[in-house]
Image (tube, rainbow, N blue to C red; front, side, top):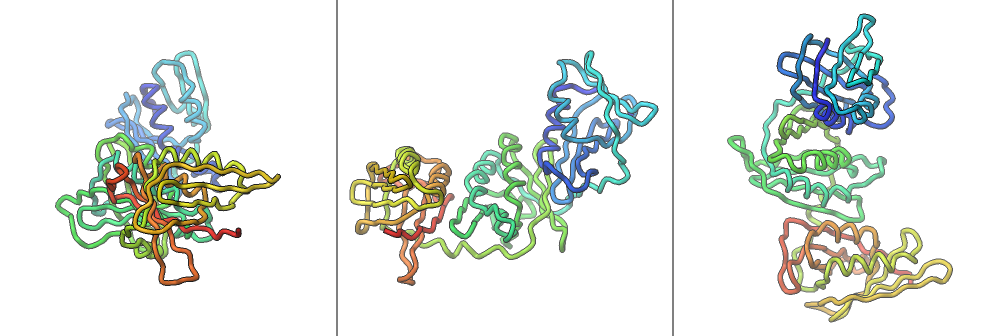
Amino acid sequence: MKFHVNRDVFSEAVSFVVKLLPQRNPQPILAGVLIEASEEGLSLAAFDYEASARTTIEATVDDPGTILVHGRLLSDIASRLPNAPIQIEVDDDGGILLTCGSARFTLASMPVQEYPAIPEVTGDSGLVPSEDFATAIAQVAFAASRDDVTPVLTGVQLEVSGTALSLVATDRYRVALREIPWDGGSAATDEATTALVPARTLTEVGKTFAHGGDISIAFSGSGDREIIAFTAGNKTVTSLLIKGNFPPVRRLFPEQTEHHAVVNTAELAEAVRRVSLVLDRSAPLRFTFTSDSVSMDASGTEQARATESVDATLLGGDEVTLGLNPQYLLESLGAVKSEFVRITFTSSDNANKLSPVLITPQTSVDRAGSDSFRYLLQPNLLLR
């Protein structure tokens, strides 16, 4: 095999396909990148049985063939090569010779025949705007659990219904939900389709395809090998779906109530960051919402204490005091993407259980924002 390729194009392609591979893989063969050279150009792919990435680029192919080479090493080399075309060929001993300007590398070839087949996706697909999808992922994925003890909570539930795609994530203490437009084309149906995608994989998809026009999302496979594929331009990422029943968290979202506070998002976030500096790790921050302000009170170790208040407008009810996880609140404030935020105080039928707060965008003090993003946060018990 022998081909010539642009350095920047090749480096970007290798970087893309290795991004989803785990840092440490128990099977060395899965650390490889599969490179196929043909008359159509160059195809690069990586697969670890759970996620795959594939891309095609233009190249001048003198001698078609297929090689498998250590992905992260190749990515590191390609990113540091001089500004010159790259030539890659297989020498007489089966080694891989990479030449770029005066730089020469000889890399070990991995056995192509032992590499697993890259998943093919043949199911129904639809389109979503790439920027909307990337924003939606950023607004939701952080709420997924990082604890592998309950695998279903480490994923983001994608649900297609009619002309909308919703993304939902929860770690039991909070729920994030975002809806965006969905174009199912001729295959559009009112029947709901769901897919539970690992949050880590979906986050990388959002970063990679953020500015790629429309993204095609396809569902394929059956049984234990159900997969989802994301395609934009010449890049495709597939992911094995998480098996299990995602909790029915949608029913936790209350009907909008009139008892709520409106606060400037940036001012509240900055105050929370300052006051929580003295808090013990995982301790809740005390919030008191009054008719014209929200005050924060934190007590920590070494007799440290901090208080601060910012302007707020409380409507539809009495003064409220509750404890919230400051980090969880900050993540929601970063996700609302609006100048103001509405914090709605919900009611519960159980007098012994704290009611969650609903956090939504607010365009101005007296005008609600879009309801396409909603975040439900469970308050903490205050011990004082």
